[in-house]
Length: 250
Image (cartoon, rainbow, N blue to C red; front, side, top):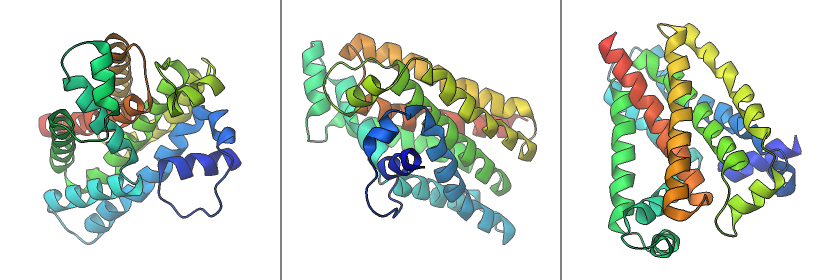
């Protein structure tokens, strides 16, 4: 329980009292999906209320849901996405890209990737009927936190920082554990048109992890906390866009 408390204090703004020993979480980083189950349930509440009240405007329901998702995390992972964007868009050597990513100022790359990811995530949610927004955001949260767990186990760090600390306390088998912990989210398929919807969402989250891991190795020489945070935001967006596409086609 102490590891879970430390995880939630790290990934959310929930008032959980005295800070827990972070080492407990770092040594059990495969539990990342638990944070997704918690934030996913919380983020699903507004959409459920809208649906139960007979509200049919998916645009408003999607906007409120996405706002809750970002707020409940304290925009911590979103901040990593912005830093990653600056590093991604920087020109020049690997050192220049890393310097841009670590720069405290917000550049054009950060604004561009931040706007694009939020816009696409919103478009995905808004493309769904109101009744489907809750299970979709729940799945997206669990699978995006699973991606963070995969980075913790397999994302070799290129510098000192939170990623290196967690990575050094992790083991490669944690990647299997975090996937297994996320698999129960597939049961959400009972609220969706079919199991293959959630299976596809799981697959696209893993694909985002693989692509970002390869990209980070090429551009930065490894992974840091910003890359992990970006992985969370981008994989969530990818899952929501996938759901939006499936809802529009089928």
